[in-house]
Image (cartoon, rainbow, N blue to C red; front, top):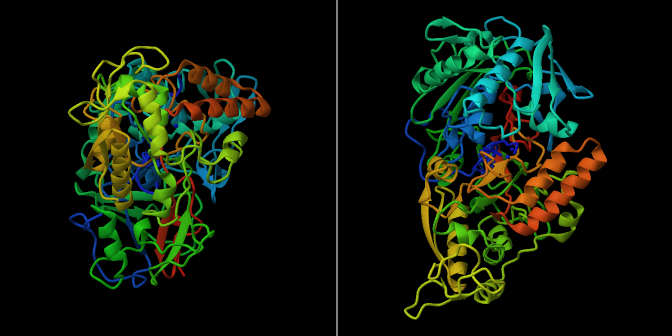
Length: 638
């Protein structure tokens, strides 16, 4: 979840079958990077993993397996733009923060990544000219008894304004986004907020990608070390309040005892979180939203170092370690019959029920366009075409993914099915199937030659002509790249090794390094770290920007634009999409943008893979959410 929704920008990285969402997550294997969108993964449970008798002996508790090398990292829901990418991952946002502090609008209605009015704190917004009105439900309360009201929304907006003015801002927002695109934000009554939108806008975009970023904050947080402050009513007080809250959020071990973080409006509150990522949350009996009868009252989130380690526990539900809700690694999934879709085959785990869902995300990895050595090479479209020719998406799907996957075809996800995908791209399928000879030909046609002493191809004909290496590429520059990818997931390891092998046949050398998810995300979204050329964390979940309009990931200078892609035509097309005032104009602008950017290959597209959730028999977790939002308050044992 950075991931995964920038002149305007957004969020979540997800690294497992995302959850990213920003994020995976977002992000959003990935991400999410909100969400970042991001992938995760495989060796033995992290130290301190919960243990005990198998369920459903204890029908009040669920142990939930986190994706490999991911965990809760940061409790304060206002994640500043300078915070690590892992704080904005699908895993930290959706599995942790949203359980405690509900966003203004909740997304995901079954498998559709759309606004869910029933689980939202506010009613759907209404528009009149350039004014938007938000009416909150009067039923939601903070755990200290105070109402969740209009001033809590203004509190968030004031903090966005203050931090934006200081050059920090909210990590899910892009230049030109909230709060810069609104004026006159005010609480006109206890449960009603109005604001005026600056300039033209699409209503769908503003609801799905702007208001979706807001998380109301309790007045109990309007404090500094010196005592009460007034950020909720005065922007001038907000910088000091943010600094104090950020400092308090740095003490992970205090989350369970903190009076600040104990004020929640979500269904859960922290009992404990240790440095290893073992998280225990208890049900908030003051929660005002919908819950299932006889729902669980304790949720234990357990980290794992690899997906193989998690799978070992799933295979022995009577052992000393227990997982009630986990995930089936695709490399361990039974291969579905020819022509069958995900979920058509029975789970290979007889004590669990398989509940698959394709996340609302795109799977990709970026080039580091800002890298002083490799960046000029990556900026050449012919090179990106050649590189995508080396990616065997169908081979990854039929091989390590065991048939569970959909090829990535562009900047908008084609699964689950929505109206957002360009008809031209939907008809085309994967236009970049494995073609090593085509890649070799493109490189040779643009001045790349094998050195006399061997090794990767080098630029033998520098220059800007149509048959030369291209602007900025120096004579002797070599196709030798450092590729970092998230450790712990067998399918990602297999895909990375195959890509390196294919690349070697085309004259490239790719140096593979597996690193923890957080490290990969940290490097990819750093403005100064150019130790990498290619970085794969997994995916980007469309969250909290659920409309895949591109400003989050592909606009120049967007905070979540890992690698720093920049294209003036792309920027103009994105702006036209966001400014479209009618549904028809929005759709046409959206399709025009996609059709252009898909051919530009700003990133390396990879297969989207489903989340293969496993729930222990007898536990009802309902329909999985394609936006990767979990609702444990609705889980119960039958």
